[in-house]
Length: 273
Ligand SMILES: C[S@@+](CC[C@H](N)C(=O)[O-])C[C@H]1O[C@@H](n2cnc3c(N)ncnc32)[C@H](O)[C@@H]1O
Image (tube, rainbow, N blue to C red):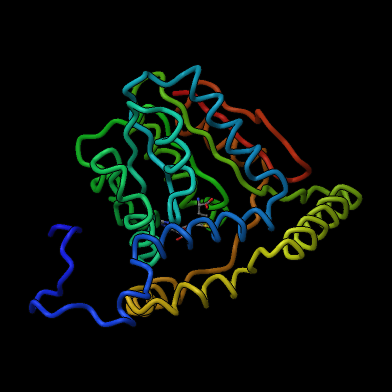
């Protein structure tokens, strides 16, 4: 359908109130920007973390490589990869129907350089949604902590079987200090608190406030029903350590694995196939 038409499908001119509404694409871009601010309030240095991941990609990714953004949300990593690497394509995978649709709309201007796919990482067959793609890099942020130990270990095995030879996984996430270091835990908590206070004062929404804005858009409110159904009975976060992630990656078959960035209990873990 042409975006240039000035009339509705029935031929009538749009009403004044219709004209005053920003398009779904514009709303979606604004919501993605607000998502970034909302998430950054929970993660000190979130943008620096992304920059570090992309700096690593610059050294290891073929110019026309394929990047898988795993548990992509509305596509924050994908947006940054597509902007920085003009010949790279992205597959953005998530299980949240609202965030997938929001990402599709917000990043529609990238055309066929991006494909959003609906996957549940709990499903052992999830990689079939990737088709023939062999990603050169898998990037994930603030997401894999949702997976219980056995599911995470299996997902790392799935990635080892899917990533192109020599390809990399970069996982940025909160990995709690659970080994009897109360000062470390306390400093992480205080740092989180300070970032939230600072960013909220600057206008960032909290999680519930952001979701209230999204579901005020009719198209997304409709999908939120399915979202609620999908996530209704998932268990709480399992709190896995850095050591667990690194060992699970090695056991999954990655040749090298370890942290490349840390801010208190926030890490980027790199693995190479
Ligand atoms: C806090 S968001 C982070 C999104 C994005 N990576 C970012 O940093 O902005 C966590 C994401 O994990 C996704 N997720 C949780 N469980 C999942 C599952 N079983 N399969 C696929 N995605 C999942 C959620 O839908 C959500 O988009």
